[in-house]
Length: 179
Image (cartoon, rainbow, N blue to C red; front, side, top):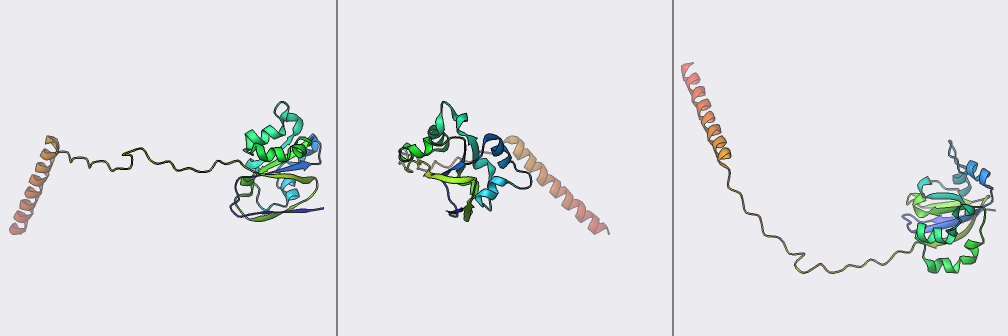
């Protein structure tokens, strides 16, 4: 059986949880990237960034639990987790958690097949963007800085440069008249 999952171009903030029908040892081989990547093939993904892919044993989350991992580690809202609490807490063994960054913001159609089974899809909890007004006077332009008076050393250098140019011009004139 194969599930189809449509990934939109530019997708962000989506977290997908899969049940993986493999034991811990088989899961290590399944996640090994050595020319091919069995996990990517089972997802049917064209692009898959391993930095956004977590294949783990639920038992390794002892003391935290998968729900807390999703909420605190992946940014899933507690409200969404309440709705899927029974599904999430009922998982054991190997699970796969994929953030939407894994798909490189590219549109693709996943053809999910065994040993993967999609359990839930969540959206990250993002607070709405607020634009607070700037503090009073913060947007006013600063007065233009006053131009500094050249130092005595700078003026001496300029005078010396003019004198050298005059000497060069006189020398060139003398040579031209002499020839």
